[in-house]
Length: 567
Ligand SMILES: Cc1ncc(COP(=O)(O)O)c(C=O)c1O
Figure 1: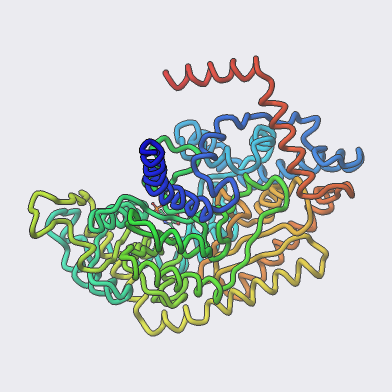
Figure 2 (figure 1 turned 30 degrees about the vertical axis):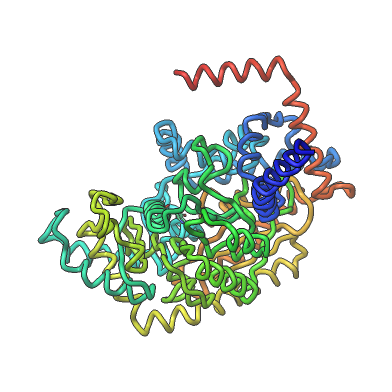
């Protein structure tokens, strides 16, 4: 009897101990996005098993079972397209090749312009210039003296037009010249910049950094320091810079045990925030409003036509307000990472746009007035790097080049304009201007039966493909051949500067349509009736499996890669 009693008591105690842990784990599992990118650990484990393979020049144009005459047409047009690109930029392409051999960054971007199955073929035939020598208005000139319209937007830095930043830099250099590159003592403009940024963000204090990545690192580390909690919550698909602390997925080697990667717009996520005691902060990239829970779009991932975007300002704002309410209630620091969208959505940034108040906000890119910068704004209590009552418990977060005089001067030029009534007027009208322009291009596509659609948050656009196809990634090259410069993510993102006039935009829209008509005529969207996105993905999955199951080859590759890593 006594033994039974003890067994019962033990079972009860064990249940009482284990059940809450199980429940917490279950809640976490529910709050993850069901896609593979919502599961950082699993995708990290799987990534090494995805084998590299390529289509040969013989079968690369037939991966959708198109009839022989179409395949032949594609083959010819592919060569023609390559010749057109080469003719526009022979010197630029030659120099790009030299730079590539010394610049790992360019090797990476060149390798990830198209799905890897087509990599060698494309990089051999469709060469792209990575060199530019001048800008004027919304156009950019390559080394060969040829001009194109810029849709790359310098990764978001170019909000107001290159001419604006050139002027910021000219005037800024004049203002900083007498001090020169002095670090330690601050240029007097630091006071004005900090004042303006504090007003813009609605937060008490400011710190200056060299990049957006650094500003995010600072925000997360300070949130952990002050809350004394371990975990960061970030959302599936969101990009926050290249620090491995915000890249829990594939490629990372740092243990991802201080990050919860959760689903945006989910009651389960709110439940996790309401019930866990180890969450220091929640990091939000407001640009995700354009594609919640999906990664930033890149043509290298364009295997089929399943790229999606759906911007709903009201719905996203409502989610962010619910999120903010729970964070406030639970003492979790809400960080808005406005490195990309800050100022593009208005002077008050995403906070004002979505009517949400954050505890910390990061800025970067455009706020440097054309020079590199990262900014963190936060509440007094969160920005402090020491504790009055524990003098050795300090968080040492400083950087040699923070608040560099030249950057402070160009930033001041930017901020002066960004706080002017003229900017408020301009930015106030921008959203509807860019909505109308997106509508115009979409109706041009529709009127010509082109399977393309653009989606936008103001001047940041994503192109989606509306009919199943295996060669959508080629459209970026037709656009380039028609005099449009894109960033390395291709049609994954167009970033327009706000100095685009209606006439400039009309010219770009005409070229987008022309490029699409050429691509259609060359047979890239002719498809077999059975081709669906699902069928394409099934086929690619089968190919992956076949290559992976090629065991002897796999082990040889693995050994070679291990050897090169050791070297
Ligand atoms: C939202 C966001 N956060 C952080 C960063 C990183 O900024 P940087 O490239 O200046 O380090 C980026 C860059 O694209 C970004 O878009």
